[in-house]
Length: 67
Image 1 (tube, rainbow, N blue to C red):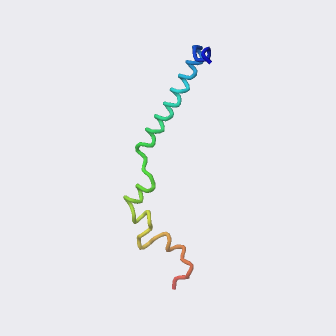
Image 2: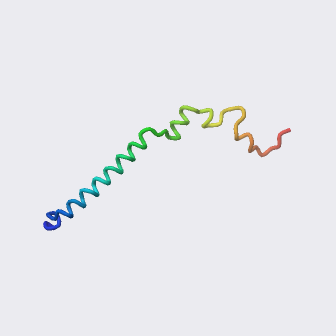
Image 3: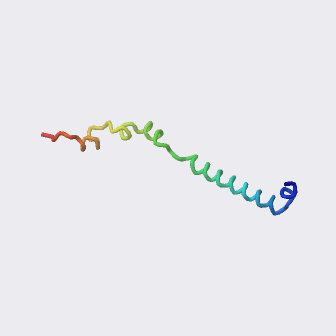
């Protein structure tokens, strides 16, 4: 085991793997930082999110025919 950690190629490989994981995590954090979740959208636009308007899409699916 001591020989393995003393090996320069092994240390370099572990270093590059860790740098790759760090870069992927950084890119993921940056891409998610400005995104808006569905809950955020519903808080900002409750009429649209919960269909509270007069001409809701839910009205198109009524089971009783309109007279």
